[in-house]
Amino acid sequence: YHGYSGLCKENNEALYWLLKSKELYQQLDDIYSYPYATLIAHIANTYEEVGDIKKAKEYADVYMLLYKLFFFDEDSEGIASDLYLIARCYKSAEEYESAISCANTAITMMRKALGETHPYYANYISFLSHCYADQHKLSDAEALLSYAIEILSKNGAEYKCQLTNWNIELTNYIYENAVNSSDEDKIKEAVDLLLSVAPQNIECYGGSALLM
Image (cartoon, rainbow, N blue to C red; front, side, top):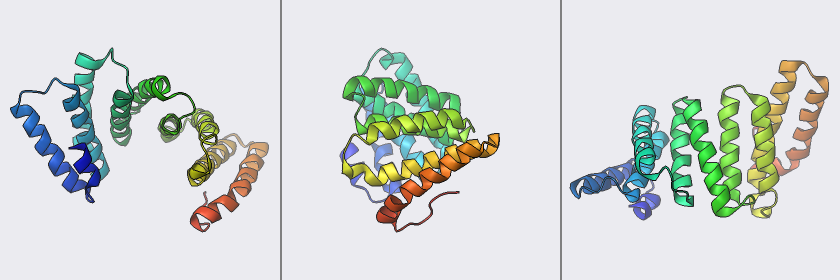
């Protein structure tokens, strides 16, 4: 089912086949296996992508029940990927405590599986920064995103545009923090950073929608 759903052009079509796969697992009475749990994570994620946050959270809760009952002591890249998808669902549902908990566990697993310089590891940390930013904890968000940028910058020119996006986000965090604290030095830092990433933004996207 993973390969097919990945090839589907429409999320609704992917969701149809994921739910069909779920029915087959249930008919086979194979609902306590890791592949079934992974399927549940992908169903949750697909509901989140089509905007049905209520359903996404319901399936996220089911996944976490399976995880805690059967896989809590396991540690792998696959489970890290599942937990990242579940964290996205909880973030969309504005259940930030659950989102952060899942993301932190996923980050720990991904670091063990792939190391501290892998782009996936950087992506997970970037996601965690967004969880804090959504709660207006901008100092935490700034620190985490700065770390993610540091990691991704070691991974070659192919990530140049993604780094540009992250630097723009970081500039927003710095600027909002500065405005909240009336810190003129911080405001200048944010403007200087924006000017430094502007040429890369133009190269990647034609200069559209920088920030603020």
